[in-house]
Image: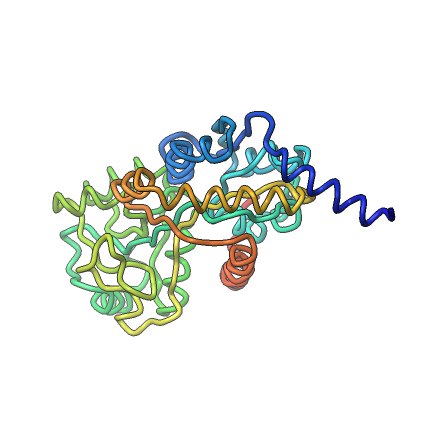
Length: 314
């Protein structure tokens, strides 16, 4: 038997026996965010499908880099995984030096959750929609500001992409998290933000903030009465917050496929769908290959923007 045949036999054996012990899922952000919610929601159903416990390990720091580096340096045996979001792809262009390669050191498994960002305004901002916002921004260049939970976040880069696509000059104000940003926006200290529904929807329902648009090509089912940016004439502005599961590069494809299949099954369960709906999160369908293709496209968009706008983090 040649070496390639032995490898195929070995991979088949791994696939049949995996997993034989609990699996650690590293969440590179604090509890309570979209990554953590997606991981803990899947943990309601995924262990039963895998036949092993899923241990959520929050390792926050450096915009997701602390947890991602830890995951990248673990053995590629399927027992340490990463629940990463947009920052994994964005960080490849945002940072001049990283202790790991976000693109080469991980293999995609499955999409865990998605949600569009929203263009959210304070009620006193005299605009009703995206067209009004653009007209006001062009009439008052550099006088409007938008807040984000921090530099390099998807909210920050969604705002920068909006500026680039609409030719407006809106000043970015970085906060230390979504909580402080929301407090200041409700208080009228910053008039605009590009936030996920999980953060803004409760305040939209109460009237403390108002929605101008969702940042997807089509309207979002969670807020069907809110138009998309594309409906205002600015196509190609399709910005989602996403959370996906990754494994270290070198993980056998049989294990990747097993995990992907079980994640897809968990996402289809009523319990997960209901929990996601209450958190304004969508449960997307994907495969390792479709996720890889999506990540390639996503990287191209953000890499171009980051380089064009000269956005850098040290």
